[in-house]
Length: 88
Image (cartoon, rainbow, N blue to C red; front, side, top):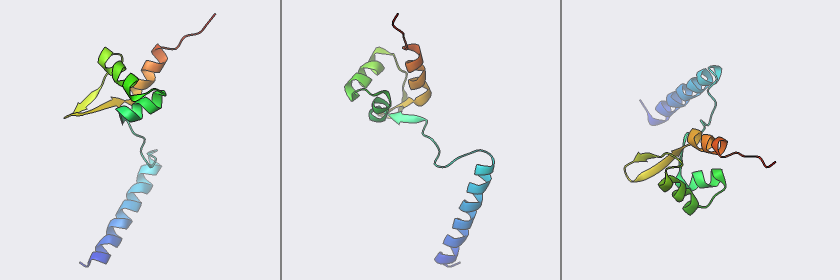
């Protein structure tokens, strides 16, 4: 098959898959679950170094992939919930 014809078939298949996923409640683009440390720091409104300190203290669990470190967004949300306080 020619390259152009093959690309058209792949494009149609991906469009059909997208329609099926949207019908099942899957939206595009998919939200990220794992954030790198700089992304996690931005999410929390902290500096990269303060984010590293949270990881080193064990306040936030990490996911390792080789040398790369990721933080689960649900762990970031639970960190925020655990550290909420009010002043009386």
